[in-house]
Image (cartoon, rainbow, N blue to C red; front, side, top):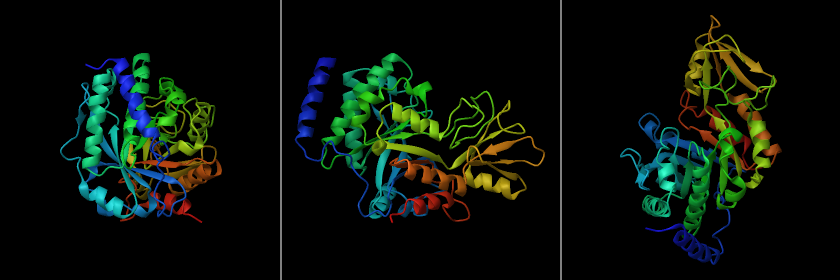
Length: 364
């Protein structure tokens, strides 16, 4: 069994080999052929394949696809569901100059991370399996979506894991990408030593959505651009400022854009509620077309809709709010966006919201 000293020696040897490669520790940029000025990573949910196959994706508006999800077990084995493999997705993306990264974890898939990262032996086993799977199935890298690192022991082991994984990925020819889906604020972010691991990531993607939901004490916007009414739950702007304080450089920072909204069974924002649901953009458009009323929030710069008897509201993003968020990203020099997830804005045979992003980030 490898101890920590052996792990450090192995890490050092890989690092030396990596430094000797001119490309190894540079950011692996999106393809030069792509017509976008910003990074656009769209998550593709593997369980949506039957209703939203690879032929429906608007690749011209993307630089990367994050294929969700595989996961670790507690012994360091990579777990891949039988319906995950989708070679047509990878092939078609590459034909359109879009990179594909394997996303590991995601909500409900993270119970194996603490055990996997807890020993040098488990980490080595997992990293070797990730590399083999990525190379055998034409992935351009991996995305770590550990929800969430939550105590000092996991905090320490997360650093070991990311450093070892990154060095192994960058030692490949060509080097493979490493990205991370990161929590939007300090509640979970306090357990991540961004200052120590940021150099090992190509991009750190802040999940700037679900600021309110079934866990919150009051109703509110799913993904407000700005904080209003002294709401302590936060906003995209708050998260941007938080990551700057945590020393994540703009060239590596991506902010999240949701293609979904959250509902609350109450009559307005900042109220108590009993139940909250999750709806994709296409579902929300069906509500709007059935008679729900639309309201634009000038302060948060996002919309919401309300049912006729005023017992339920849904906060979401539409063309207008996403356009404003893309302008915010350009004005503040942020590298780009992540999207959760690509099937949810497919409405009337068109990727309505993705098109807004692609046109706003089109190269001049």
